[in-house]
Image (cartoon, rainbow, N blue to C red; front, side, top):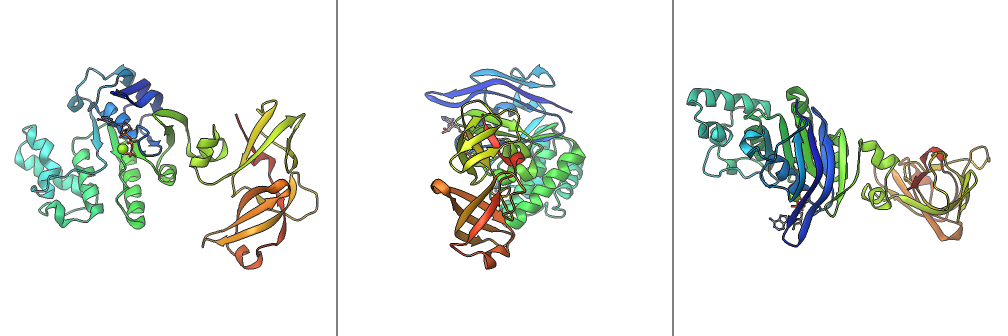
Length: 347
Ligand SMILES: Nc1ncnc2c1ncn2[C@@H]1O[C@H](COP(=O)(O)OP(=O)(O)OP(=O)(O)O)[C@@H](O)[C@H]1O
Ligand SMILES: [Mg+2]
């Protein structure tokens, strides 16, 4: 079991600040996702944990001890790269067993371990193929087997699902979760895809421009985003500008009840996710009832997305049942309910 801790980690490449003051705990035996747009420093952090890069400042700790003076091969942390880098002229078996051979492990033991690990990633019997005789998904799994064969306590995966189609992504995701649980490795996964991070990770660290913007369980990023940028990264959402007046927040669409305790005094941005805006009867029984006009109804198979306008040219988006697309046309007047518990004040 290994707990990984980053303390004020920074990395400078000449003029470029790739990582700036990142502090993060990756609890042992859990999956942490490092999420963020291209170029925000994710791979740099992973390489620093693996020992392939030295930080410019800050520290990397395993179980409370700095590993900066421990070389990569002794950290018991392995990294699977974004472009999985298999040796093209070696067979699958030789690729998986390569590190073992370098360490002088005998041939029979290597063969047995290779077979075991190919079975683990659900590729039994493919040891004699060449990488170019495998699909992209299979190559990805060979790269995973090559990492697992050294029995790491920390597994570092850089965009493990990025080259796969939707069906294979789901399979690979399941495989990573199953392996992570059964082998109990602390796993850090890098991805630029928020849905991927939510489906895979116990904890997410979201980064922009080399800095950590928010850390927490996936639901926090939907329910309690720390900034407008964080909220927007998790899909198109609604924002309402307002000002706190007593127990209410005065907005362009009228006074709203907000359940969160910590509404700051003065101007405030409220956010509410499209899936939390509800269509409601106009009976005045619920708080935060509003009238709106439908501008667009987009059928998306599993749901319908309604684009609405309210008084004062305010726009809101709402997600509702797929059948609504058939009954609610452009120009329809609807009544909305904004549940106070889902109106989140951005600090
Ligand atoms: N060896 C290097 N020399 C100079 N600049 C580098 C080097 N490696 C990375 N960078 C820069 O550091 C920043 C962070 O790069 P990094 O590879 O960590 O991003 P990333 O979040 O993994 O992006 P992506 O999602 O595209 O893989 C980028 O601006 C990149 O150009
Ligand atoms: Mg990268």
